[in-house]
Image 1 (cartoon, helix red, strand yellow):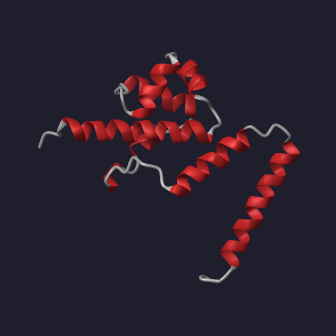
Image 2: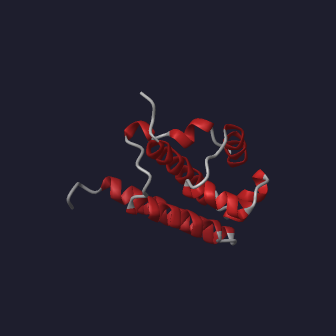
Length: 129
């Protein structure tokens, strides 16, 4: 069965979201990504919003500069292709973005230790406690 245009648009939005998530996790701006892949800021923005289709060659280049496998951008499509960030995903992206702006390595290590400590305490506490 042939996919309808809205289904294709859903895939474009999903791929764009995955580009944005990975770019943000790496602490890159849209402008930096655009320069790395040889497009304008506006074009990078349109890719991330799913407004413009990302060609196979361009997606390969994006994957290369972000250090990802091309398949990463399609993960989750088989689960219905959810293209909206959950609250937890938004927080993770915000933490990642903010962490990338901390220049002092001692401060980075302190934040990392805090996260590890909280994660260990969370894992060790009984459910519902």
